[in-house]
Length: 104
Image (cartoon, rainbow, N blue to C red; front, side, top):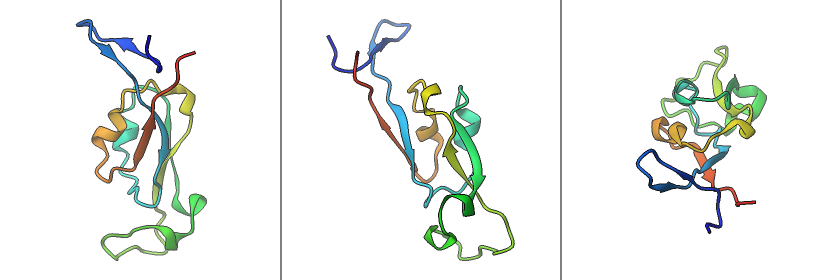
């Protein structure tokens, strides 16, 4: 028996889901790709200023307008994550970390 929660694919292969547990909001660009691809209601866009100080963020282009509201992704409901890792696959900045869940 597996130490972690496992499932089975349609083809019968065993699969271990890896659930989202963190988003590096200092590198997140708020593109919304993860939000769009997530089949559940796991993520939400929030204002960057609500999360961390603006100085903590990586503005790769050096053109951040102080009057412009910048958004970053946050985890709205981690308990709704099904462990598909689609968010990580579409993230251009590799902001996500995932963990397996121990079997009960």
